[in-house]
Length: 148
Image 1 (tube, helix red, strand yellow):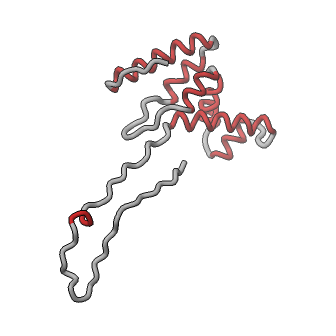
Image 2 (cartoon, helix red, strand yellow; image 1 turned 60 degrees about the vertical axis):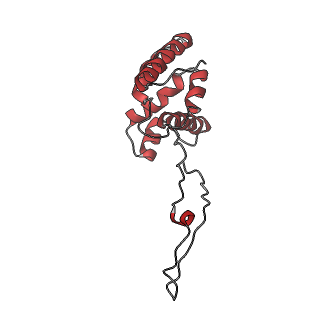
Image 3 (cartoon, one colour; image 1 turned 45 degrees about the vertical axis):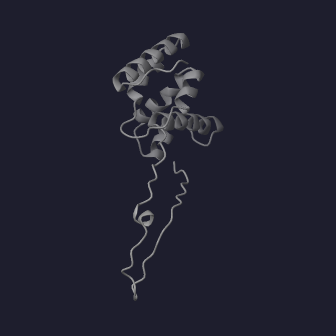
C-alpha cells in the first residue's frame, strides 16, 4: 500500500555562469534526512486480504477459493492458508490488522506461525497460544512485552 509522503527541505541551485564558484552556505550542503514510514506487516495485509476475499465470496462476486486462486494467480492451497486466518478469534484478527509497523528488517510474525493457532477451535486456547507466540517473538528480538 502506498502512503503519501511529503518532504520539505531547502534546495539551493548553483548557476553555471560567472561567479558560479561562490561558496554555498553549509546548511545547503547537508542533504535532507527523511526516514521512510514504517511498512505494514505482511501478516496484517494477509488478514485484510482474507477479510476482503470473504466479502467477495459472500457477495457472489467470486464463486469460490478456486476462482480466487485463478484471479490472484496463486495456488488454491495458498488461498486456503490465507483464508485460515478467518478461523482466528475476532480479537486476534483485530490485533493482527493493527500490528505496529515494521521499521526495518524482517516481519516478526509469519503466516506459518499462525496456522497452528487458527486450527484451535477454542478461542481461549487461541488467545493463550497467541500470547505464547508473542512472548517468544519478544524474547527473540530483545523487546519487552506490552500488556494487553
